Image (tube, rainbow, N blue to C red):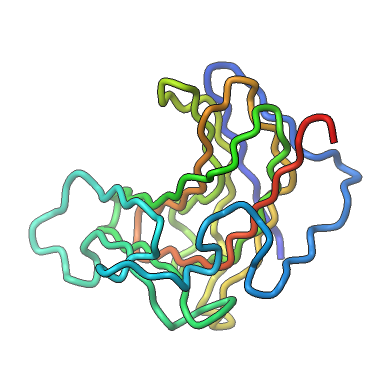
Length: 201
């Protein structure tokens, strides 16, 4: 599968990624366990059916007459799990961006974050990024590394694997988030396997 990686750099900071002759993608343990992302397989569910630990930022506007299936929502579903019984889904009206994110408890400035996640969509023409965002101590986003969730679920009925490789956190990083966003129905994901290596390792 061809994977298109988008690296957005904010405030003129560059995010070093792993070199061209990189190690092979990581082997992901059963249950996506052993990483630093909370609720990695989205099997823990809150009372509102959202994956536990996630925050939902729905679009600020919803056009009149938007069907129920396209109302902005974050929820868990049993349709395409890559691990366990559930996968997560963001639904949003066409052209209106909605975002879900979870805050990563392990923050290591200049640490190398390596992310593998299974994701997909039913419309690969839309903008549906997922990845990592880095913030400073006043909550300002200082960098992002993301990839398009451009695996077409309709071709095989499954989520596809995406490997972002290693991303070095900026030196002023005080918070890290894994995020998923979409401007159309739907983006789906599961098995967020995130590891971090200290800068001196």
